[in-house]
Amino acid sequence: MVHTEILLPDHAPIEYQDRAVLWNAVEKCERYKTAQLAREIEISLPVELSREQNIILAREYVQKHFVDKGMCADLCIHDPKGDNPNPHAHIMLTMRPIEEDGTWGAKSKSEHILDDNGERIKLSNGNWKSVKVPTVDWNEQTKAEEWRCAWADILNEHLEKHGHAEKAVRSADGKMLTISNKVDHRSYERQGVDKVPTIHMGVAASQMEKKGIRTDKGNRNREIADINKEIRQTKARIKKVKTWLYAQPIINPPTFLSIMQPVADVKNQQSKWQKIADLKTRAKLLVFLQENNITDMEHFVNKVTKINEDLLAVSDEIKKADRRIEALATHLGHCENRKQHKAVYDKYKSLTPKKRYCRHEQPKPIHKEKSCC
Image 1 (tube, one colour):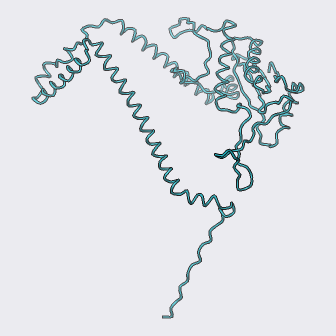
Image 2 (image 1 turned 180 degrees about the vertical axis):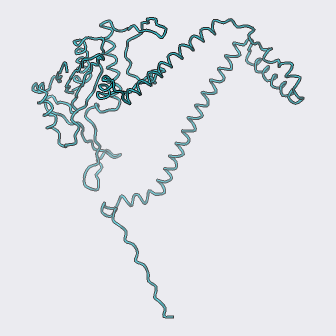
Image 3 (image 1 turned 90 degrees about the vertical axis):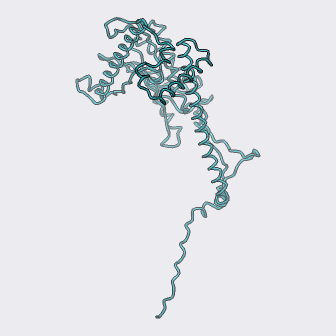
């Protein structure tokens, strides 16, 4: 641990600069023992920057995206020594906002649900029907993506500011190349990169690997590295083949005559009906060329490609319409069920909770009188 710091909003009590005072106050204001006290965010710091530059980077990110929004932040930066440096930061964030008077605010509040007339709805137990509404948007699922994107943006700004926007790497053939050193928070799949991501090793597995002890996670990452190497080599070979093919001259390119004129040997082997079918096909092709004013092979290829694209687009629209029709059919079925059982449900709701769940007594069996015969 090379740096620790408490960052507070402007209206937070100054005594919260003490870590023990802050987290004891957080725990004291909660009423339930199962309450969530903090949120932890871990970020990786770039090895290209110095320790002081990484501290400034982490502080700026925490201040802008968390403290300025009303959270108290406990920042700890780790920089373990060794052959494989791994500087990173742990950020502990409070869950409750701090009011202007320095007291802890509520995580959520209750709002009454109103009917069509704007009146509150009273439940059978005497309480008013309400819904819990969060006071802040810190727990929204979109926040994780927003914070990751913000970290990538501010990290790229600092890398460019200190002259580390690019880095030199050695290619497969031994040449030194300069590539971009920018960070992207999206996954390889979302970026469209043909690369398999490695898995997180963790502290225990990393320590064992450094001591020469192979682990399952380490073996998995080595397999992934071999797969990514094969992918890079295969793409390089494909690129070379494409370059070679494009450099080759086209000898005797196909023409309309070569397409429409069958081979003589095959023509002689055709039966009478096969020859008639072949003539009909060539007649349709000729009509297609005349209707679309096609005079060369390039125009012909472009036209066929456009038709295929339109066909795929129409197919997608048809599939969407079919899914919509299925959903509407399901909704109509639910409507019919509601109409059929609404009277029973209304009667059930009109009963008191005690009568709703009472057991029905089994009817007593009828004993027949035994005859004396």
